[in-house]
Amino acid sequence: MKPIKTLLRLMLITGILLFQNSCKKNEDDTTEPAPPPPATQNDPELITRMEITFTDSAMPANQFTCLYIDPDGQSGSGAPTQVDTIRLFASKTYLLNIKLFNDLATPVDTVSNQIHNEANDHQFFFSFNQINVQAGYRDLDTQTPPQPLGLQAFWRTTAPGPGGAGIVLKHQAGIKDGNIATGIPDLQAGMPCIVQ
Image: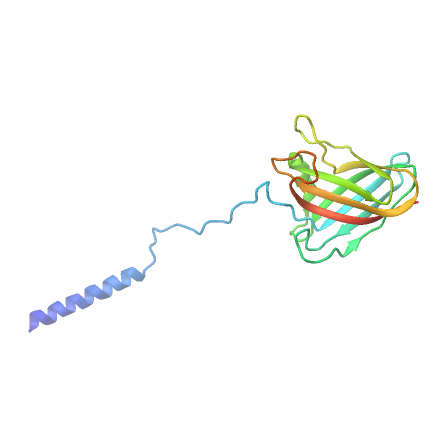
């Protein structure tokens, strides 16, 4: 009987040791969870605020800034909370400087710096409704031949009248062709515009 008791004890001890070892963390196992994939140049930018500074080319001291604020950005479901009216004078040329921000980032991210660095993958497009304004570009990307970017632009006004301005920033990573239909929008802003 003693050999059976000894055998049972031995099996019980072996079972307990196996169970304990199977529950122990393997200290040699240094694998960590995989980090999230990094952002790529194909990811659209999150833009919550656009500031456009207009400078009268004939009188550079005459400057004003208009804001377009969309707190959750282009892909969010909320509406813009601030859309300033752009007020221009007839028969003038205005130099535009556009700054873009992501106010959801901490600290606030100046997205226009990234757009500038990725100029070959972005382009602004300007359109006008019921007003006669001609738009052009003052900055180019580094492609051959260079294509427009639009963080720096100009608008030329003619006759007075009320209307609207459309400002679209397209993300065209690897496919920039100067066509507004190409790529995905990082920003689509409609703003009232009055030429007086």
